[in-house]
Length: 178
Image (cartoon, rainbow, N blue to C red; front, side):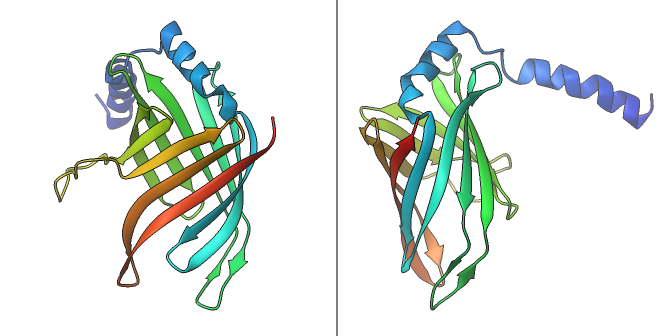
């Protein structure tokens, strides 16, 4: 069997066994985040850098996934110049594992698989990997999204080294339209 034919046979089988189809309860779980649907303006700080961006949430793929798109305008500071960039994240609820998943990718080539768990006021995020870990996973969340109201949320984290200093991201987002 040629490589192409083997690939066509193996990939669909892998996709069918990798994760079960989402069921009606997953769609119901997704309705718990309906407040996010719409356009949000966000301000963020990372170390000494601060900026703004727009993000839009919408249900996609038959209402079984929440898509978040980002639009970061170009931003210039005394230390650096950031070009405009975009990003997309897909979030869904894995009924079998009773947890959320998030897949993020941006126009700079970065990507992050993330496990999310419900908290009393939002989500706790744990950055994951598709590959063998080189360091043990740390306990506790890497970042949290906290719902302050139907029109405001904050994100704290992750924390990581930047130019020799540990920095923590902080985001405040306010809804501008449904």
